[in-house]
Image (tube, rainbow, N blue to C red; front, side, top):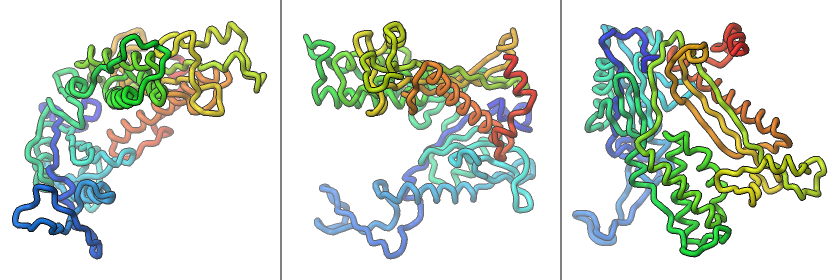
Length: 415
């Protein structure tokens, strides 16, 4: 928030507020003319209707293939209609060039936008998240409540798309404790089953359900689970009992640290920088591969390349990502928002901005190839995050080439 604050009064501290639009799809426009849509009554029936009578649908409802798109058009139209008067100036919403689901509040004068954004509104279907100074936040809440049916707004300690956002004095915590408590569980492993036995159909279905819940958790707030969840995903089609136990280990770890999540700390604008860490675990070719002599490994290379943690023990080969490949490396990257004093023999805060861990999409014939693939993914992720932040700050599209100056390259090489 501190990084995005531009030109606000010193006492106007930035806060977050979230609101839910009631019956979002029904607040939109009517179905196009010529589209006759009828609905059977539920078993309990509708008041004042006879059994067997059909109900004609006039507006978009949940379940229609076109409803999400129609609601998105309605949301855009409503956001464009909203106006905020601040310091005798008129402000209106424009869409972020890099993420159209984020609307930026900018001064609107003589039929065009000018200046830097004064506030931000993130949208996810019918959930809205406002980031702005306290005074402006209240004005935005009022403007949006006059257009959309929003019962109440939560501030500074709020729930947004399954995450709990807690805004403190010097830290913003994003966690999914409630989600972990309600969605995670322990798979029941049959007694006496050997670890190499195949799981039954019911256990496979439960395992896939648990992995799905863990996937959302790891993608939103728990980077520490990402690699383990990715490995479990690759085994969920035909898991063994050992794989089921591994999923239980991930679930137990997620529950043990359920109160943890992403922590964002203030960083002075002048010292703000982005740091990328990347790594790869090369999944080696089979030792007995006779189809391609170039893929054959020495015994020592094969031994050094085996993954000994997670679901793959030393007795078990890593399954390939592609059917026609014996190689599927696991690559990962971690993007940090950091105070650059922390890499110049000083101290500084940092926060996790982006992360990923997955099986490589390309076949790698060497450890260097896998490391290079991870490096490219990490660098591209950091480039996007840098452009995204600069675009949010300025309110206009900032490509990576515009953000990166020659002196930046020099300092990067020195680091």
